[in-house]
Length: 220
Image 1 (cartoon, rainbow, N blue to C red):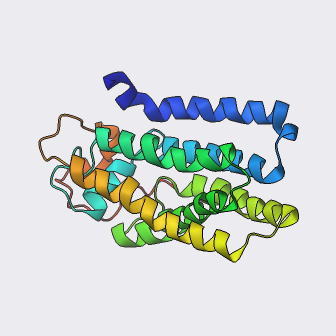
Image 2 (image 1 turned 180 degrees about the horizontal axis):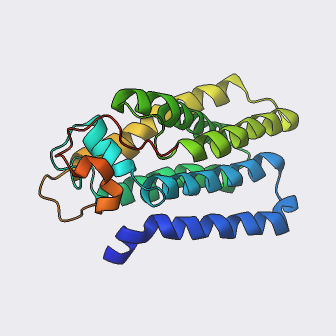
């Protein structure tokens, strides 16, 4: 488990390549909405790899930049929290519309989340921490957004999503973010946690106790 806790994002990166290759070979067997749901899953796996491995400095931005933590390598988010939130919850939200493509509302929720990821990582987070660009922005802008738009177009070609589909999707998303994001982070936060991020993942915030809010993550 400890090995997986450290490398889940790497496994996800490999899985993203496997899924993409499989779609190239067998994608014609899927409906177009199902195909773009699968590509949206790939986008999430790549997004997680960008956040936690390359450049991988999202933990420092989150703990040190957004929460001004004095222990940005472990609080409020630690490696165990990151694994649980991303693998047990976020990935599953993207898997569901691939398995159940006829449920349009299941496909709409991750699309809306992808759009929100683009706004958060490209605009909101940089403004809050005083950086030009934040890890996760590239995959959100160049994968989540185009795949999400393509999913909406494909869904309209197959059948227009109903008002009920949109209502369910809009209700599911905040409910999911609370249950799959906020609750685990609150339950698993621990200032003395042994599940700590590396110096590379913490980045600039690890060198000054988490007070630095300018100049970090300006790698664009």
